[in-house]
Amino acid sequence: MMQAFWAMGGYARYVWPCIGSALATLAWNLWAAQRAYRQALAGARRALAMANP
Amino acid sequence: MWTWFYRLASPPYVYGFVGPAIPWLLAAAACLIGYGLVAGLVFAPPDYQQGDAFRIIYVHAPSAWLSLCAYTTMAVAGAIGLVWRIKIGFAVAAAAAPIGASFTLVALVTGALWGRPMWGTYWAWDPRLTSELILLFLYFGVMSLRRALDDAARGDRAAALLAIVGVVNVPIIHFSVQWWNSLHQGATVMKFGKSQMPGSMLLPLLAMLCGFMIFFVAVLCQRLRAELLMRERLAVWVREAIRT
Image (cartoon, rainbow over the protein chains, first blue to last red):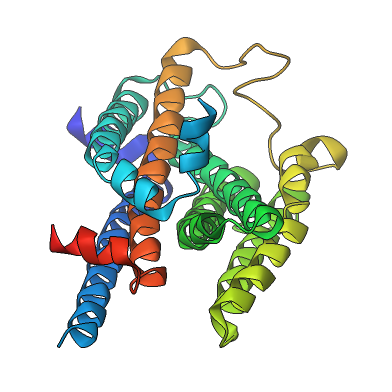
């Protein structure tokens, strides 16, 4: 049963990379957006510290 | 109602308004994508022609739709910035570009992987595939143009102009399968208002489409917050926002 699911009717080598690449892109977007926000926040804090030493 | 609408042009209002919505949007997207994946990969029956390979549709179609939605968002936001000189329009356009580009790439890769067993080739210079590839180049062009100019305001305006010119490619992608002879299959979800797919296949697909769109909005909000902080880092409201 599980073997048949993973085999995807013989199309496993096409289906699973597609699912994997889509999930990886979702995760990358989440990480990149969070990283951009953290970097912008750090930049704003630096600008604030330079303006008020 | 109009007061609320006008506030959307205010960076501090938008920064504070979208922040609390992000976790809820991400939770809704995770539920819809989780349901769509399980129902689409486990419970939907195999297609009578394509077998289990058709399950690629559950990531390919939402990625392709998202690529078009993100580009349209970018062009409309850029136009708002250019016409009404609303700075937040340029910030939205800048935030949407990398998200759209990444999902355009996913649409092309998953399309190629689907094409190999169905058409016998990973790539063909088919109208739908070629126009989607042009969309990826447009995304790269818009992102590069924004960074290429030293003056950020000029970069924003140039990128917005390119995005607006390039938006002509969006209907070309959508209608390419009707206008030209194409290897790519025609509309299957909605055709003359009635779906050609049975409910057990369609519901997971609709869940994935909604999930991807909500995910796009959530990530766009987070990237928009970053853009606003970066662009307005010397503004008083930013000082107050980062102190709290």
